[in-house]
Image 1 (cartoon, one colour):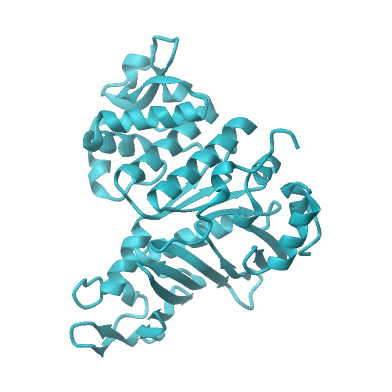
Image 2 (image 1 turned 135 degrees about the vertical axis):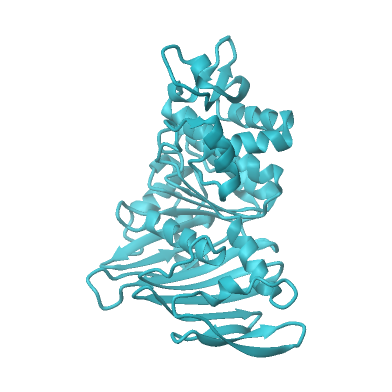
Length: 394
């Protein structure tokens, strides 16, 4: 179809790289309960587009991955009410296989293998054993049933495998593109300073994220943002953060309130974030975040739910192109979701994970686990969207 050819930049690096990659995941919660939900084992590559009809489980999958990373990075310290994670991760050429199981707010099981060798195991009582690298032996431990042993073993001398996992998980960033990204969120100057020091910043903490990055990287950071925004069709001469009282007549507040602004070519005024179009602000927010990762050389996992939501076809396509280029340039792994026809037709099938749900069970079909079906469809010469709407995997 005219204007819907696959992205040219997607023609390489579609296999997981040697650095850091989530390669497989399965998940189940509330077994034998009306709330039961199960994701059968799903495999991932360096670049991924998860597609599926509404209510299939795309956003839920992203939350499951994000939840796993929060557990491993100790951002989530309390056990979940229910859930069993089984994940395969490649870190620095080593294969990590880990499992967590939660029930009724307690940890039922933890296990970790590295290159097929057991490194940690514990049961519901909290008792277990972990490998000490200096002693080259296992030592028993006991933790409360509500505590995750792996979160308490970040010792680079004795348990470097735990530290490696934690560092990878800390770099995971999740963006729900269909949300506001905090567009209506302005921050008082005193609150801004506190926010930047207290905790890891979330996607909605855009003003704090930008100002912290600008102080570290200065003008080259702004120039990178402007270049990427130009790729998306936004020609900017300036980007920054300022007191919104000076930019918004009638905004009367007792203290300085900081927000983002851009200046478009041909216009001499600073456009405050509240007055930007929804599409422009979403694009700006994502561009800021991916450049923070690029400047910080963070080899990480980037999750983008509902990619391109609120953007027209051309800008949506260019945004995907930009994300893939950044992922390939920095070694990041990228997992996106969409049910948009034009997005599907732009991203080659080798990057697809096609979700199908039967009852409470979701299965992901990829070119790796269903090579014959994918190859058969490619020979037919139809659009990718036809593959999505077909009953091939019903």
